[in-house]
Length: 130
Image (tube, rainbow, N blue to C red):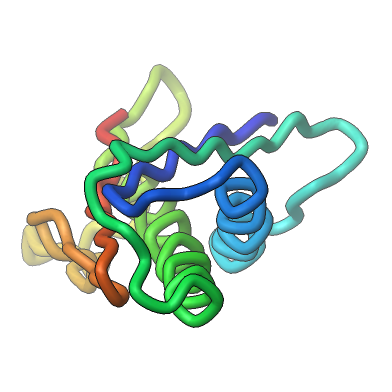
């Protein structure tokens, strides 16, 4: 299985800084997927920037952006699993974990996107809808 992640920010990033954010964002895959980075995977993280906001403290803000990117990646993967629908004989997460009373125990993931900010840059986190 291959998981693709796109991290978008408004922070001004050099190519090396974007690569550092992508490396850090890979931690989000490890938090959300077991096993991850197997020899059969093509897991990749892409980082793009609108370059609208300069980093006030490049080293500290870059570290914050990377940490938040990892959080966003993990949340988006979990939300994608939660939002997915059943396919043929394969039940979705919600279908598999539905309670008899009609509710589900997967309610920890909220139905709205999150917004995480770090320094001058911001990352919006949107979970994928399958």
